[in-house]
Image (cartoon, rainbow, N blue to C red; front, top):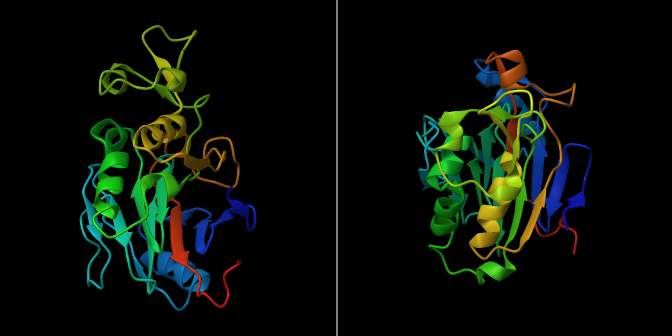
Length: 229
């Protein structure tokens, strides 16, 4: 289980997870302020997201790399991705961890499998011992999708519901689809946040309010001396 550490914070063992309140998309100073307040001893990395499946190793860079996820085998780094309806995926395997942006395009192209593959490049426990978390995003009741999304892949049946008021459209539970993808990859310990960016008045929804704001999903390892045993 994920141990709660506040309304928008969670724990997976030593791994701390937090979701920000809305931040202006162009205000990089605000992003960095929030990340440094969250974990001042971490060197933070986040990608310049392109709605693909490229996952890269975290490292010190002058500019945000073009990718949709990061993996880390070094406790010095904290990782973050942006999302204003798209849920983030977090994986923890031993002391290695990764994060990815889980939009519908990434989900259709196999972002969960690519994050798993990239993280598995190191010496890790078997996947059955990994832990996964799916962050806040738009819920299935709020996410209406049309033909482009429906034809993008074979979505898990339980993640789709017909839209009675819009023929040819459906409601997609993207977090559930990502969970099913992870379970199909052999990762059985998967928890969803259950928080909807459209329903929760504190948060910003791209579908409801447009592109001006977003949120950050951030992860970092606590020092061993401060972690809960």
